[in-house]
Length: 148
Image (cartoon, rainbow, N blue to C red; front, side, top):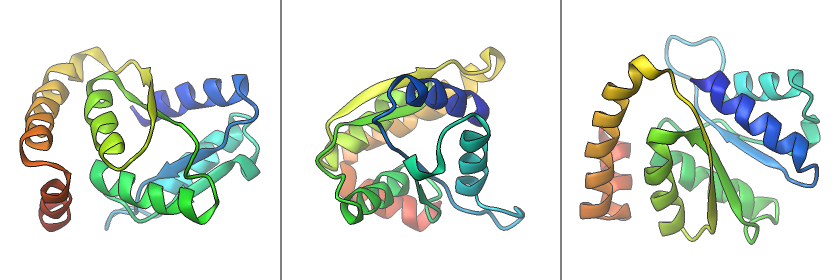
């Protein structure tokens, strides 16, 4: 799934040479490197110049991705730019809602997921989407930081 997201992002970045990329993802307990570093290496290997890639290595879920992502944009003077979210189709709506609640103007860049995994992903995302809509962003950030 991660490779599909990165391949989709790489195609977009190659077609839009004036665009930069922010990648985010932390390092799990049993991982030798952070998800961010793996993604950075993959994009560079795909032909994306390293100077176009900004990293955020601390987040472990979508709400954290958005929050830390915002910090990276602010620190680099990029916070007024529109944001394109490269993620799986089943995850796109929820990611866009969280991003827009954080003040981003977003556009989707969806990739296809492995079809046999779709039912489980959709079920999980429907519950998370409902929770996001019903409870609101502030409580969602708290819940995610506490439980996940």
